[in-house]
Amino acid sequence: MQGLARNVDVLTQGLKYGIYGLMNLANQRADAPSDVFFVNFNQDCTSLAVGSKAGYKLFSLHSVDHLEKIYENDTDDICIVERLFSSSLMAMVNLSSPRKLKVCHFRKGTEICYYSYSNTILAVKLNRARLVVCLEESLYIHNIRDMRVLHTIRDTPPNVAGLCTLSINSDNCYLAYPGSNTIGEVQIFDAINLQAKTMIPAHDSPLAALAFSPNGTKVATASEKGTVIRVFHVHDGAKLFEFRRGVKRCVSISSLAFSMDSMFLCCSSNTETVHIFKLEESKEAPRQAPEEAQSWMGYLTKAVSASANYLPSQVTDVFNQGRAFASVHLPFQGVKNVCAIAPIQKVLRLLVASAEGYLYIYDLDTNEGGDCTLLKQHRLDGKQDEVDCATASTATATAPAPSENPASATVFTQIVQNTACINSYAGALRGRSPDSMSGTESEKYHEMMAATESPPKDGFRLDDDAEFPPVTQRTD
Image 1 (cartoon, rainbow, N blue to C red):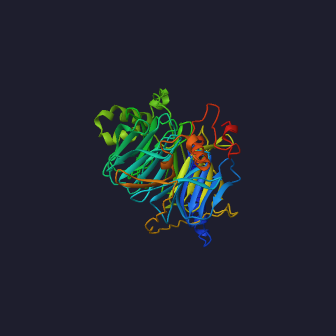
Image 2 (image 1 turned 90 degrees about the vertical axis):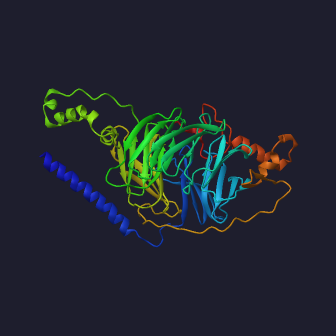
């Protein structure tokens, strides 16, 4: 009977994966949303930003069944768009001007400042204290309240993917980036005190993904090989957890993300599987029952334990690595995507946003784990189509040189250490008190200050009284 049950399970799994494949093939349609350049969740996973050749959109993530659009701008071709928590402060980069960073107040439709750099902007990260701009061989750290350049990390190893991450916690405000392009070294930089924190030798292969825990005390890493996920303590670089993502094949890791309580870590790649790991302290092996000790499995367990000291370290490492607590089988593969674990309506969900223009929301059993069930699928182009699974599509473009905006009386331009040409409204504010500014200048100054204020213990302080979504009303 047990053998029959196993066969039924295998048949069921095969049928399920076959259905996913048929769905993927059946929906190779010309109207699939294929012009998406960028998808990313904000710092607390309450909203999703989508950048495309038609502009950018912001969606609320407070409902499983309904994807509510917060804002839409259809004037620019946006390749990077980052929102500061649930405020109206946005940082974005146009595909047509890849060296220019714009900081905007999207609700008021105002541009607060802009900066131009000597090379293409590959990534932008921000929290309530700092804004980091990543170029291929340098990192610029700005004070987000006035956008002043505080520090430049020069001559970093070639980082063509723009791999870096910034802790969302302003108290443990750390920046992580690759310390080498040949091995998996993680350089941790203190973005508040502007000094190197530690270097973590995380992997033998170059890094592919990085993520901080929400409180900034842990950092998760993955290499280009993609088989092992590791979690380290930021303070001293000690390894806390090690998880085995796979053995048979190397994959390209798309993203790593902690849940807001740091109990779970999700990992997505270019395959159809998303893995969820549970970060719980290892416990001593339970004492075996007499009948189990006499079985062949009990004998094998004791034999492996007894011979661990004599086996190669690679073999014992595999035995000690944790396995996935839960998993998701996506209806696509080979498409760049980002994943997140976030509470929606007080229930923890797994979210996957793909560059083909879809958002998938899955159930996550936090007690039993196992396979996650697809709850809802949303298109990100605004069309009412929550069933189809579009096929992977990629769009590449060669970006022209950035256009130079004419200088104005309110724009202060300077060269930052001979590499970044700054055209910033914030420069005009430097060294001036709010009382000495004009009405427009003062308003922009206070917008930056209000949007980046640290939230009180009972909730976030937003930059508008009518700010959406109302984070202070959330109890999860």
